[in-house]
Image (cartoon, rainbow, N blue to C red):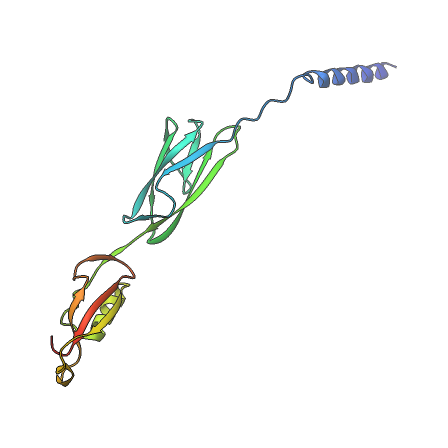
Length: 183
């Protein structure tokens, strides 16, 4: 009988505890972390080997990681320096805060490498083609020279070029040359 009374008492205590707080609504979930990258913009072209990633985060106590590394966060603003590989790069940013859903974003940045146009004037056509190809450029040739040019015994050479030697251009740029046997 004592055992039965202990079981009833335990059941009453359990029911009482379960009923406590039943009138209160469950706590509201906190809003998720807000994350905004202000620089650089998605699809930005960058000439340097690195880029400064910056933006805002809320709450201001959130932790931010850029490419898996902790970013400096102060007053709800974050920044981080990211090294870039030549060509397209995808940069990911994550922000977390206690008792809140994380925020994630990613954007693309292209590290554009410029190359110097080689000096082609005086070079043979084959040498000019190899020289521009090594730099990731293409060659467009136009025949020059007068009506007697085909009678000159030597091979075709570059007489003029555009853009000029030493000009910094994007890879893939076309270098236009005028070729003739006698310039």
